[in-house]
Amino acid sequence: RAAKNTNTPTALLDAASEEMNNSLFRRALSNLGLSAMIIGSGYAVEYHLFKRVMGELGDVAGEDREFEIRLLKENIKIPYVEDAIILDEKVQKWEVFKNQRTRWLAASFDFVKNYFIKDFFKLFSYNLDYFNKVVSSIIPPRALFVFLLLIIALADIFLNFRYIYLSWQMLFAINLLSLGIAIPSRFYTFKFVLAIARLPIWIFNMLLGLFKIKGQSKKFIHTPHSID
Image (tube, rainbow, N blue to C red):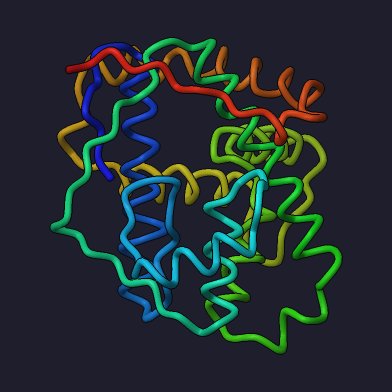
């Protein structure tokens, strides 16, 4: 799935996030022999399989995650077809982006509760694809994760605590480097730098969104479309 538009700072950052997902959670996993992670659109599945599994799910939040976990439990491999491009319109306004991400975050909490917390010991009885999917679900959203690492790295300067043989500053730098490599070089423009400058405001608003997360997973938030 690739961005159809990058006409606003919000759309540009959303597009970069999509490319990170393609690099880290699809291409990289596929290269390692694991199943690529699917998304709410941009994937193809055999009709009768789709009908059967979705019929079992009913009306749930984060149906793409639920659908994926059912496939992995059945040992169905999910390949990544890199040359099949699906254009997706990116969110152009921050308010829409924030509401969308708040719902996704709420669905993530529900997913962790249903699969990681309740069925922790069952993780080891399934295949590696299933294990990877459930464990990766506990990782916070990238922006919040980078912010958390930054806070710990700054605290480390004064408190001098270490994670094995790596300093938290090194872990923070490695995380930023990995995210930077995951973004295609065509994104690195002055316009992109200006968009990144807005990230602190984004992160602050996402933190505020954590306090409004209750009940959000049950709401459907329509993403406005305006690009022909």
